[in-house]
Image (cartoon, rainbow over all chains, first blue to last red):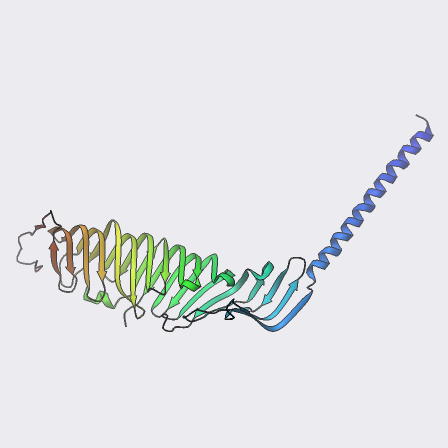
Length: 188
Length: 147
């Protein structure tokens, strides 16, 4: 195979490798730009309060936080020190707070994490209640929350621990799913 | 013991459902309850609250079991039944359904047995077509359990 043909093959291979390298560079650059784009919020709010009204014009729940950053591509938002109030119908409201939070797409779910506390002051509906856990998925429009983490429920003269919880706030019903230990009293 | 009522109630179970509206909690799965010398075991335990305090507990099991040490008595009282209700206010245990109670060497069987934990007395009643069975051992001078 004479020298000219050999030269032709080598240069064709070189061109192929070069174009492959160039297209990979372009791909990496596009991904890098997209990655940067994804980390940039399109808007942020600080010290805000947002109240969602129900069909009858009554407030259903209220979300407030020290700061919220909204990310357009996933339609999610990061929250600093979120506070959620679920308005009760006839019974006391439930108040939730945590160190951090995230609002899912369409604001259907609010993830709370870090020192999560949910508190219901006492009233004619019953004794005050406090729920403590590490993280929680809250569905405000359904007055419902759940977690797979350890939970402590306290009230006057009562402490109940368990792992995993489902909370049906509108029905004032709490379920602890495993490893339950409870202490009541002593009587006053 | 009469001091049992001043002790906290400790409950262990697989799961619990707490209903604030009705003031009732239902513990299920391998339930164990202790309060001082009193102990209950069952598959399901329904705890009724009044003013934030436990007023009554209903346990169900195959069977549910109960035991407690009466004041000044030599022997512990043990019982079992399909359902055992413990009334913390009245300090009485109601054994309902195939009730069986042992107090030292004495033995009582009946459809419904009421044990007064304060008075250390037993009251047994039968079902429609059954009778109460009681085996009361002769007293030795030292024992002071009275039926």
